Length: 87
Image (cartoon, rainbow, N blue to C red):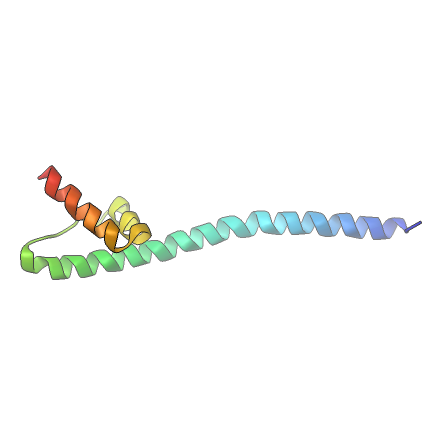
Protein backbone atom coordinates (compact mmCIF):
# COMPACT_ATOMS: atom_id res chain seq x y z
CA UNK A 1 0.00 0.00 0.00
CA UNK A 2 1.12 3.52 -0.73
CA UNK A 3 1.20 6.05 2.06
CA UNK A 4 -1.53 8.65 2.39
CA UNK A 5 0.96 11.48 1.83
CA UNK A 6 1.68 10.22 -1.67
CA UNK A 7 -1.98 10.36 -2.63
CA UNK A 8 -2.43 13.78 -1.04
CA UNK A 9 0.53 15.15 -3.00
CA UNK A 10 -0.74 13.52 -6.21
CA UNK A 11 -4.24 14.99 -5.81
CA UNK A 12 -2.82 18.42 -4.90
CA UNK A 13 -0.59 18.32 -7.98
CA UNK A 14 -3.49 17.44 -10.28
CA UNK A 15 -5.62 20.23 -8.80
CA UNK A 16 -2.72 22.68 -9.20
CA UNK A 17 -2.30 21.74 -12.87
CA UNK A 18 -6.03 22.19 -13.54
CA UNK A 19 -6.09 25.59 -11.81
CA UNK A 20 -2.94 26.72 -13.62
CA UNK A 21 -4.46 25.87 -16.99
CA UNK A 22 -7.69 27.64 -16.02
CA UNK A 23 -5.75 30.86 -15.40
CA UNK A 24 -3.32 30.60 -18.33
CA UNK A 25 -5.93 30.17 -21.07
CA UNK A 26 -7.72 33.51 -20.46
CA UNK A 27 -4.36 35.28 -20.18
CA UNK A 28 -3.33 33.91 -23.57
CA UNK A 29 -6.65 35.01 -25.10
CA UNK A 30 -6.30 38.53 -23.69
CA UNK A 31 -2.70 38.73 -24.90
CA UNK A 32 -3.74 37.67 -28.41
CA UNK A 33 -6.55 40.24 -28.38
CA UNK A 34 -4.12 43.01 -27.42
CA UNK A 35 -1.58 41.98 -30.07
CA UNK A 36 -4.22 41.71 -32.81
CA UNK A 37 -5.68 45.08 -31.80
CA UNK A 38 -2.23 46.65 -32.14
CA UNK A 39 -1.82 45.11 -35.57
CA UNK A 40 -5.28 46.31 -36.59
CA UNK A 41 -4.51 49.84 -35.40
CA UNK A 42 -1.25 49.85 -37.37
CA UNK A 43 -3.03 48.59 -40.49
CA UNK A 44 -5.67 51.32 -40.17
CA UNK A 45 -3.01 54.00 -39.75
CA UNK A 46 -1.17 52.80 -42.85
CA UNK A 47 -4.41 52.48 -44.81
CA UNK A 48 -5.59 55.96 -43.85
CA UNK A 49 -2.17 57.43 -44.68
CA UNK A 50 -1.99 55.77 -48.09
CA UNK A 51 -5.74 56.05 -48.70
CA UNK A 52 -5.52 59.82 -48.37
CA UNK A 53 -4.21 59.88 -51.92
CA UNK A 54 -7.50 58.44 -53.20
CA UNK A 55 -9.54 60.14 -50.46
CA UNK A 56 -10.23 56.85 -48.69
CA UNK A 57 -10.34 56.74 -44.91
CA UNK A 58 -11.67 54.32 -42.33
CA UNK A 59 -12.72 55.39 -38.84
CA UNK A 60 -10.78 54.36 -35.75
CA UNK A 61 -13.12 52.50 -33.41
CA UNK A 62 -12.93 49.16 -31.59
CA UNK A 63 -14.91 47.32 -34.27
CA UNK A 64 -12.76 48.43 -37.19
CA UNK A 65 -9.54 47.88 -35.25
CA UNK A 66 -10.53 44.33 -34.27
CA UNK A 67 -11.75 43.46 -37.77
CA UNK A 68 -8.53 44.76 -39.30
CA UNK A 69 -6.47 42.98 -36.65
CA UNK A 70 -8.12 39.58 -36.90
CA UNK A 71 -8.70 39.53 -40.65
CA UNK A 72 -5.70 41.54 -41.83
CA UNK A 73 -5.68 42.86 -45.41
CA UNK A 74 -8.92 41.06 -46.36
CA UNK A 75 -10.51 42.73 -43.33
CA UNK A 76 -9.42 46.15 -44.59
CA UNK A 77 -10.84 45.33 -48.01
CA UNK A 78 -14.10 44.26 -46.34
CA UNK A 79 -14.30 47.48 -44.33
CA UNK A 80 -13.58 49.57 -47.43
CA UNK A 81 -16.28 47.71 -49.35
CA UNK A 82 -18.77 48.23 -46.51
CA UNK A 83 -18.00 51.93 -46.44
CA UNK A 84 -18.45 52.11 -50.22
CA UNK A 85 -21.82 50.31 -50.00
CA UNK A 86 -23.08 52.49 -47.14
CA UNK A 87 -22.16 55.78 -48.85
